[in-house]
Image (cartoon, rainbow, N blue to C red; front, side):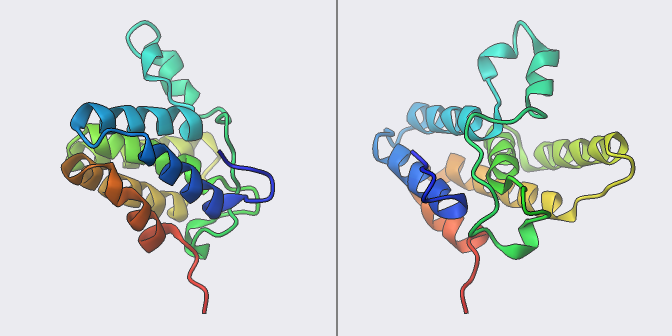
Length: 162
């Protein structure tokens, strides 16, 4: 699990990698991993969906149980010093895993347009980029299994040191 001395991307990568070591590589195992990640990092509790669909939608606006901050994530994906890139990424990893790409992209753009209206005209291009990466990773994890996720995270989310 993430610790105070390992914030941001490094903590996210370590936690995801650790979860994968106990995840069966079949579809039920992979689906369970996606559900655990969504609950921990994006505050999405699927078990609330059937009985409380509005509550499920509102959960995405609440602070998730684990908030890692922006350290170590690619600079173009970070909007502010308190941004939680892992939260937005994981929400759309979840969406991309469960929905076809076209529908997942529609969800992403709808969510961002609603945010634009909710936050008084503030547009977040980093959120669009992070959401698109999450959707792409969700589709790949659905197709190939969970073991590819750490390398995808490093390739697409990690800050590049020069």
